[in-house]
Picture 1 (cartoon, rainbow, N blue to C red):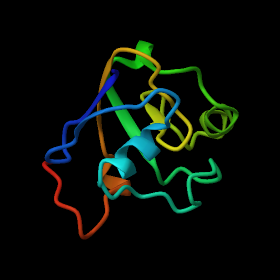
Picture 2: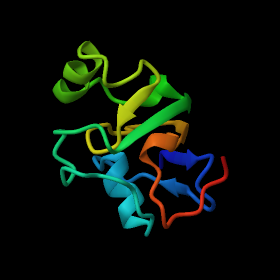
Picture 3: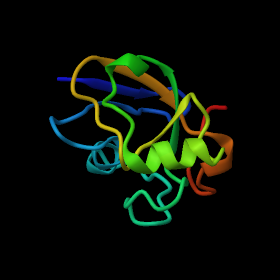
Picture 4: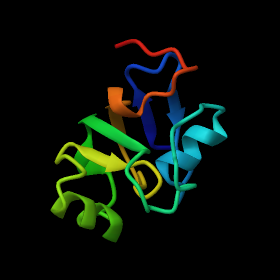
Length: 107
């Protein structure tokens, strides 16, 4: 099963079920993750900075293309609510701007 590791979120090494978004996999594993629009791709609060394995991720969703064109999503970032991990391993980080105040991060 594909594996997602969030480097600065302690304990966040999880298998991503087939067809699940990264956000759904994180929430299913009990991790709290910022998502202001409820995971509908209408904001950029669920960003994940991809550090390795970006080629394993599915193609950019329409919302990601739109936010990249507007300069609101960096080239190394994806929307956790939109992106899927069909195969392989991905390492990422929670950007400082979207870290939750009650969550402990290793920055």
